Amino acid sequence: METCKCCNKEFKNLKGLSVHFNTKHNLNTKQYYDEYLKKDDEGICYICGGQTIYRNLGDGYLKHCSIKCRDTNKTINHLYWKGKLQPKEMIEKRIHNTNQLEKQKTLETTNFNRYGVNNISKLQSIKEKISIGNIGKILNRTYEWQKNIIDSKRRNGTLKHSDETICKITNKINEYYSLNFDKEKYISKTSSHSFYGWYNGLHFRSSLELSFLVRNNHKLFTSCEKNKYKIIYEINGKQKSYYPDFTDEIFLYEIKPTSLLTHNNNELKIKRGIELYGDSFKVITEKECPYLEKTKIFELIECGIVTVDEKSLKRLKNYRH
Image 1 (tube, rainbow, N blue to C red):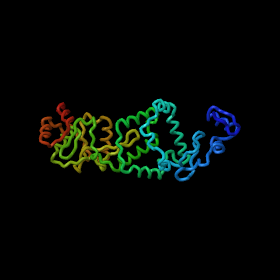
Image 2 (cartoon, rainbow, N blue to C red; image 1 turned 135 degrees about the vertical axis):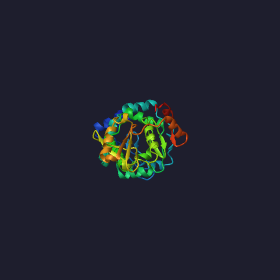
Image 3 (tube, rainbow, N blue to C red; image 1 turned 45 degrees about the vertical axis):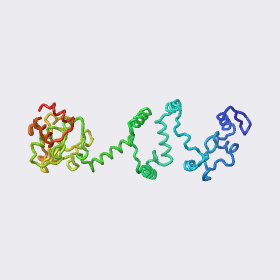
Image 4 (tube, one colour; image 1 turned 60 degrees about the vertical axis):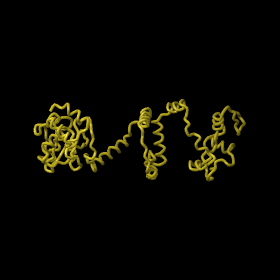
């Protein structure tokens, strides 16, 4: 039973008592506690003597003014909660009763009112602290860890980036590609490349490209997948980049079989290349450069002149030419 210190009326619990003195005596919980329950040493930090925060009617004031002071107090068992988990029922209840989208909106509003930004990590002082704190740290995120994060965000409806974040990512990628990107430094193998390997220090992504290099081995070629050869074209209002295949410093060569000349955006890329380079832009198909016979390619591989991976070798065996 709880007794009101103002009028001696009894109540079953603290909740009933707090409603009573709030409505009948016009006191909030802190005012009531300060008037009738507060001890002389309450509200003062045990470590530094600073003021502490009032918590609630049952607990009164916190014993420490900050986390730093709390951690300095050697009388506290800081390892008490280590290894302990909340009951599964409690976790499920919290997840079920929490509207994450509403919670996020409230947090952003509070941050904006207090600091002028919807996320305190945007403050320069916080950015510097985070940067300093992350120096030397390497966290290898496991598959299970990443999966749990994604599943949690999917349940809460917060998996997608905000429009602001999408805009930032897009701008950064466009800036990087426009200023620094030499594609030959980041050679990738994709499912669209049926044949992949190296010849005379140049990488090729099709048997037609290899045929072109071998049949013109008297010329000195370099890769066009460098920033200076990048061709910008536009489709559906968006800018995209494209690289020809090789150059001998006189012509730029785009190697494509006739079956792919109109595939996807190839027609638009080639048109843009001709607009920029005119007669210096050459499109080479199997008509201008016939495919090498499989036996010839196998000979080059056995001699070590051509290097391919196992998948390309298997695909080569199935080629008709």
